[in-house]
Length: 157
Image (cartoon, rainbow, N blue to C red; front, top):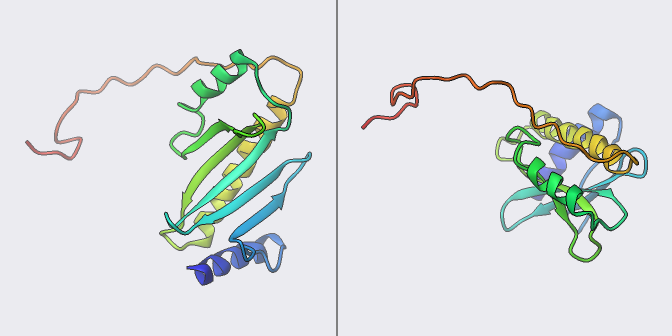
C-alpha cells in the first residue's frame, strides 16, 4: 500500500509543482499552507485510510458559545464530505479532521479531497482567528417535499 500512496502523492506533487511529495517513514506528510496554517496527513494502516488534520486556532478554546456553534456546524459543514471539528485533548486547540479513503486509487480524486480540505481549513482558520464573533447562518432553503416511494428509493417490499 505504501507504494500506491507514494505514486498517488508523487502524481499530485508533479501536477502542483512539488516533486517528491510523499509520506515519510512514519507514514506522515506535513504541508505548510498559508497564514501559519499547517496540515498533517497520516496513513492509518489499520483502517487503510488517510487522516487529514489541521490545527485551525492555536489558542486554547474555552468559549462555550463558540464550541456549541462548531459542534452544530459539524452537522452541516461539509455536505457529506466527512470533515469535523474537534478539540485536541492536550491543548484544547480547535482542529478540523477528515478520514479519507483511497479505495479508488485515483490521484485526481485524492487531490480534489486535499483541495477541499485545504480551502475549508483556510476559511475556518481565518474565521476562528478573527475578532468577529462566530455567528452561524442556519437559514436553510425550503426543502422539496416529495412523495416517499419505495420505487424511487430503489427498495422493494
